[in-house]
Length: 138
Length: 138
Length: 138
Length: 138
Image (cartoon, rainbow over all chains, first blue to last red; front, side, top):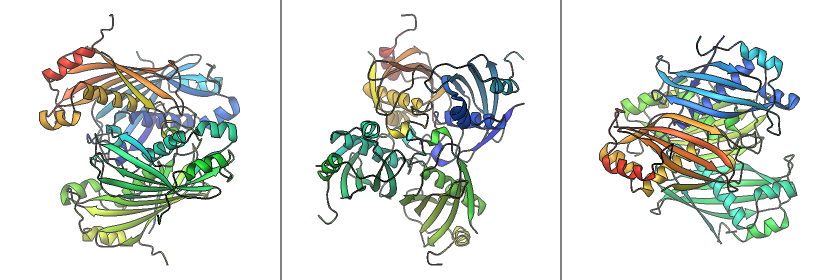
């Protein structure tokens, strides 16, 4: 199961180079991850409040393939490439409405408690995340 | 006493219209207010932590006179136009490095406690804010 | 006819005060205006490219009624309050999913050509904008 | 020669997790790169207008070490790790005012013309960029 998130590009997403600002893609993939957690049945708010479980980004990699423009509707496919006790690698493939590859991003997420100490991924979360696991060599 | 805050414009400040995005000016005047509080001897962080005193924007007005561009260095002059028991009207006049008027903004700030109940402006803060008071008819 | 635009609030929309950053509402109402133009049958991109017609914000007013939070889904109702030869006042009423009023914003838009000279609103655009006109005293 | 860029953290830089939003660091390093170009004697605006030379980000890597907070003053040290005919790897080391490591970022920049075709780095630019070259193994 892969998740698809659609994101329309507005004026505030772009810069005076005429294309989407390179830093803004990190917002869109954050949105995609938030939505995928909801699709899997978890609210980040509830995880934080009820289970003292948060996550933070530990590493971000992104390859910019082709610029996106005002008016584009981006399609973001998200999956898990690797999952451990406390860490998850998410992959996000971003294409435009014509299927052109815009960017590929990988985010390393670390689960923590509210004091930012590493914390084991809760079993129900881990189980659901494995459902969107696509191994690199697969 | 008026405060001057310099703000350089970078790529991320602009949009594909080639000018500074209209919503970003609210960031620059927030920065100017933060700095003026520091110049007056107050840290917003300490006010929040030690005196349970915060403030929120209740109303914003801004007139856009001329667009600012990438590479501009904006000069933001800030003063208080009106101050009451719980409310302060800040005025921000934004010009570019050539003295051209870019925008004039007025922000109504309301002091609150951490539960967002209105709260009297602490006397030392109020006293210092009166030092940058310039009445409208003056 | 009024337009409704739904906007979900993500982490990047908020600030460390725990609520939506006051400047970000200007993004959401820009999104709502863009979408209403499309619903009325106009693409801002085509207006710019084919008719040398753009618009810029000349004045913004916004009253902040209640803070929005991470996870909220904002509902933005947009209409035209006044329309002249070159200017349009848009009103945006922002509520959360529970119907609580978050903010009311008014944006004065001025139509210009690509050299930023004022320009008469094209008749087909003006005609359609009148369809979402709700006079203040009405 | 290494460049140091200071960046103060304001409310709009943070999110409701109480720390700087992970995507915003890409703004700060863009600012640092812009300033280093100016220190080396080049204006990005002039390169674009007079020499039809721009650059775009082709890849971004960033390791988040420790979160930055509202009120922090970040210190960003920037250097070149590798430079070829059309590509440059910039490294940005971000610390807070206490010397704590916040993040380390690497950006791969590709020089292009205004049609986004790859373009040889102009010799005067290349020469100056080599002055801030610090090889990985050095």
